[in-house]
Image 1 (cartoon, rainbow, N blue to C red):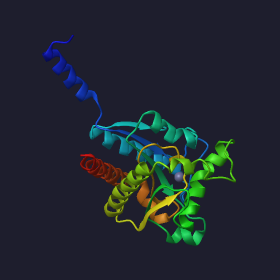
Image 2 (image 1 turned 90 degrees about the vertical axis):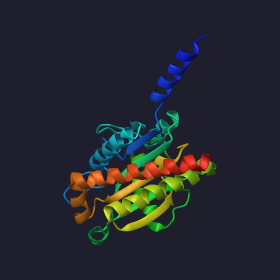
Image 3 (image 1 turned 180 degrees about the vertical axis):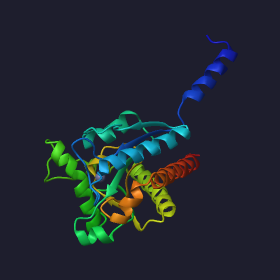
Length: 250
Ligand SMILES: [Zn+2]
C-alpha cells in the first residue's frame, strides 16, 4: 500500500503525463496518390503533410497528444485513417485537404475554404463532387471497395448521432476561424459521404483549406506565413471546441 504522500506524488506525475486531449491529424493522400495539383504542378499530398505537421506542433504546445496518419510520402488506405483514431480513442480527427475544380474557367474563378463532416447524402452537387474526388483514392487503392455502393457502411456510422452533432460543432469552430484568419471566400460547412470520415467514433471533420487549382490561392499556399496562419486557425478552433465541450459536459 502506498503511503499517502507517495500516492499524492504519483497522482501528480500521472496527471502531468496524461495529455489534455488526443488528436489524430490526417494529411490527405500520400504515396502514389497525389491528390489535386496546382497549375504549377504542386501536389496536394505534399502541402497537406506540411500543414498537418504545422498543426501538430501547435496542438502539442497546447498539451495534446497528436498522432499523424502519415509522417512521410506513403500510401495509407482511407479505411485505416479513422480506424487509427478510433484505436487510439482520440478526442478528435481532422483530415487536411486542398480543393480543386475540374474546368479551366472554374479553376481560374474559384478559391476559398470549405469544411465537411459526414453524411450519407451530400449537401449539394458541389459537395458530392468533392466527396467523389476525395473518395477516388479508395477506389484506386482498396480493391475490396464496391464503387457502386459508396454509402454502404456509412449509414450505420451515422447512427451515432451524438458524435455527428459534435462533428458539426468541430466543423463550425474550425471553419469560422479559417475563413476569418485567411480572409478567404466562405464556401460554408457542408456534409457529404467521405470514406475517410466513416468509422470515426469521435468528432471528425475534413478541411478543404484552399483551392490548390486556383493560381492566386496556390501562390498563397506556397508561403510559409500563410501555412502558419492556417495552422494557427485550426489550433484556435480546436481550443474553442474543447472549451465548449468542457462547458457542455459540466
Ligand atoms: Zn484531398
